Picture (cartoon, rainbow, N blue to C red):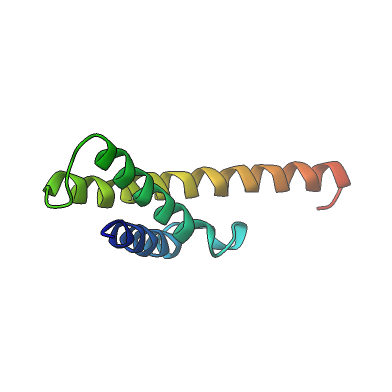
Length: 96
């Protein structure tokens, strides 16, 4: 049941990253929170399968640190990719 806390913390970290990383208009509002929740849940699951119990601090630190590192990096990549694709499409359509 503690995985729910990892999901909630991951979503909260993703939501914070959504507001801290530039280019919000180039991506969906739910991308960052959902990505944070998924990453937090996946890390939690992998670590429990590896034998760590919920009372081990490593599982908590990893479940919080992974979304905090991965989500901003993915948001930057998504924003850059979208800006590049939009510029190419404007060029293709000959729109100033």
